[in-house]
Image 1 (cartoon, rainbow, N blue to C red):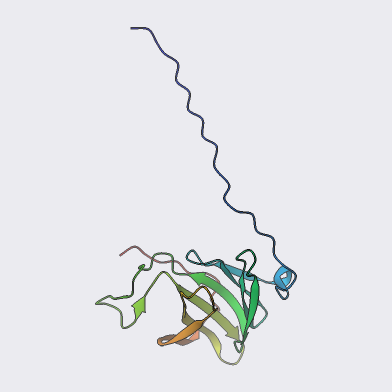
Image 2 (cartoon, rainbow, N blue to C red):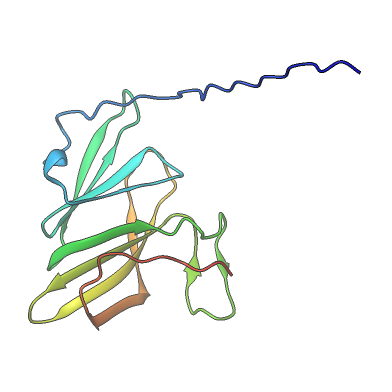
Length: 149
């Protein structure tokens, strides 16, 4: 049987190139960025301030989410969360893929880790804190990862 040469080539497709509009306050000065995998949102921090920037073309907007009481040392989405809200037996809180964790640090109080849930309505930038997922008295958190269930 003759040998037939086989060559496979793949060129990844590019599906979007977004420019950051000048309305994104201090975007270039941010120390941390967290991109939502569900929406056209990027959260970023400058010092102790948290911002959300919606880069949806034609609907760009920025929202100042305020001062968080200490230097923001980490922003990270729980990409291993569920797509639907579910209560897992070993946790006291709901976990979704829209959960954003924010770590802050200030000298007198130490580190703090909070979970925020990002709303799914594309017309508003909405985040809500989970009072059951707010930990204080920690060291300075700069990164975290999740284990698979």
